[in-house]
Every structure is written in structure tokens, then in C-alpha cells.
Image (cartoon, rainbow, N blue to C red):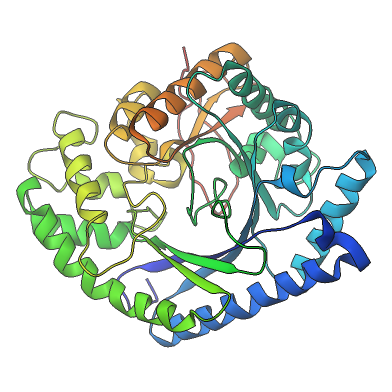
Length: 400
């Protein structure tokens, strides 16, 4: 790791509320909002870099796109997306989440178009409430539709679903694709939050802890020390119209050697092999600690991220299943994330999985999402062959 600090900042994410009128007068108001976000994000990036942190990305997330993108004319949707895309490009902002769909028709027709826009700057999600079968089926159809798109490098081989998820109970999360502007955020206010990439630091902390019983003390002492400089910078960025939401303290893996969160958890005496007995207890202890770090304002998931294709240890384990990952998610975050599944999975089976995630999220009022990659022409047990700097490869998980 090139940074002087023990982890990277994965994202500084700003949140804005867009109104249809922002597209009037050649989108002059939208341009002002994006420029204001850019200034805030660049200022934060500069200060955090000066403090020794490596900042990987700066991002923008909006209120649900159904509130500002959709009109009675189909051409307006494409025109607004292209205009928005160009304005982001002008500010060199390469990641933007357009919030969740609350309309099943929007999920099946507009979400695939959002993620298809080249060069892959846009992400979005579909909001799923517990037991909402219509919404789950729409999300499943959307996932299948996206998996078959191949008209750009960001879509080929099923990669398009990197930018879409079925999400439940999401609010103030800085990570994509579930990020959305907080409910009630004023149209003249910019909120912002920070997300981390800290798999190597997690390994260091859990090696020191050695046992579940020591996790809270080690995390509270060591993470507080490292997070305070970030928080101080963020508080300094607050002003009229600028609102600091907090740090998503989640353990988030990298593809670096030693960057696996799953491998870090295996350092605990009670675990041994990730997924074996003791794993849930470890996940619960870690999550409780991450959500209660003294003097740190937390937001988002602030839990344990287990994205299969972003964690080399998870990707190589042949003892994991989707149900086991979902079970572990009951005591941490993020849900079912970057899991490759057979390309011929039925929409009904996929909807059932989405409903399971939503049931868990809504029952415990915790943010969870379901981001899966149906891989065309591949069956369960076969290997993926993604060519992406953001992911590794693994065996394809069965759904049924």
C-alpha cells in the first residue's frame, strides 16, 4: 500500500436532491449543483491526501430518479441522462448513483438503460420492501436483462450488474450501487459521507485481537485513532448548505495481497476457516464494534462487507453458499454482494432470493442489498472469466 495510512478511502460521496426544473434553461441549475459537489469533493480529496490518505474515488448520489428523470416523453429520459452524463464528464466525476426505483415499470425499463449509458458512469437500484413480490420480480427481470447487454466494455459478460442492486432499508450509504440522497435532503443542501477500503487494516486489528472477546477494545482504540483525522477534515468542510453525514466504518476488502476481510476474520481463534462455526459470532462482534466507535459519527452500513468477487479468500472458498452468506448478513451488512450465479437462473428463483434479503433487512431495519451477476452461458460450478480491475474470479454459485 502506497499510502502513509493503514487503509485507503474508497469514496467521498456527495448527495444531492434533483428537481425536474433543474433541467430547464439547458440544465443550468443542475450544472451549478454538480459544480458545487465537485468543489466540495475536490477540497475533501485534497485535504485527505495531504493528511496521508489515498483517496480512490469521488462520487455523487441523487434522490430517486423517478422524482426527476421520468417525464411523459421517452426521449426526455435519454436526453436528460446524456446531459447529466456530459456535465459529470466536464467535472471528471466518474461515478454517479441515480438512487432507487420505486416503480416496477421503471425498474424493468429505465434501470437497464441507466446502467447501459457509456462509459458506465451511472449506477442505480430498486427498492424492495418485505413481501413485495411485484417489485422483486421486476428487479429479477432487470438483472436478467442487464446480464444480456454487451454493447460496451462495462456490460460485457454480465458485468453490467456491477452497477445495479435490489436494495432494502438503504439510506445515507456512500457505497454504490445502493447509494441515494437522504430522504428529506433539501434541494439547496449537499450532504457528504466517506467510505473506506481497509481489508489489510482489518487483518492487522484481528491479528492483534486474537479472540472475539478482544475485538471491541482493539477496534475502538485503533480505529478511533485513525478515523479522527478524517472526521476532523469532514467537520471542517461543513458550512451553510454542506452537511457531513459520517463515515461508513465497514470492513471493506481490497484485491491486494492481505486485503481479504474473510482471511482477516480467520485470524480469530474461534473461527479457523471462514464460514465455519464461530464466523457469525465474529461478524456480530465486529459489526457491534464498528457501529460504536467512540467519538466517530457513523453512517451507512458500518458493518462487514462480504463481496465474493472483491475478496480473494471468499472467491476461493468452496464451502460457501448464498444461504450461508445471507445467514452471516443477519448480524452484519451488506447482504448478497457481487455473487456470480448461473446465466439461466429463472426470474422466479432470483425474485425469491431478493425477497429473502428484503425480509431480513426489513425485519431488523438494517440496510441490505442483493447484487448478483448472472453469467451468460455459464452453469453452477463453472468458473467466471471476468476481466475487470475491480473484481477477481470464482466458481459460480447455485441459486436453487
